[in-house]
Image (cartoon, rainbow, N blue to C red; front, side, top):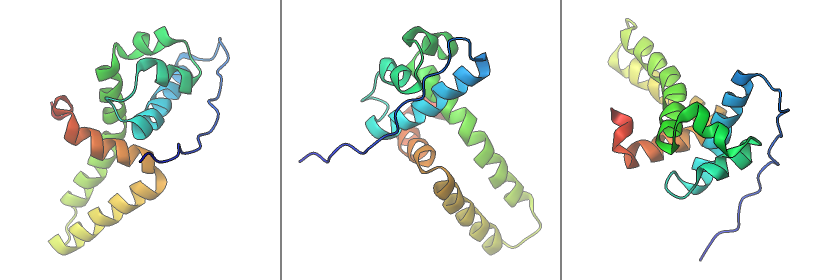
Amino acid sequence: MTSPRSPRATPRRLAPDAPEPEKRRAILHAAVRVFAEKGYHGCRISDVAEEAGVAYGLVYHYFGNKDGLLASVFDTNWAFFAKAVDDIGEANTSMRDKLSQIVELAFQAFEMAPLVVKVLVLEFGRNARLGE
């Protein structure tokens, strides 16, 4: 049994002369949406390009390949979470308080960016190269 496809927003088309950082950011956001919907192994670079509203080759230009794209999604989003966990760990509070703060942080992250959390959790476990 297959579930109906979840509705997605229409991809935003970038102007051809959009600044480079905006194009790169659009590709990263699109990759999160596509990886969350189809999974890393179930999607193609062309899916991400279409979702981002950019040319297929531009994804390769910025990220090299699908592995590079997933690594960038991971690095960009994991760095924030890891820093917050490190800060909690260094605080002069009890282990119980630290654990409570980390759990709260995880819930806040999921509330703010559920697709990012889904990709980080699912793909980290499936892709051994991300641990490197």
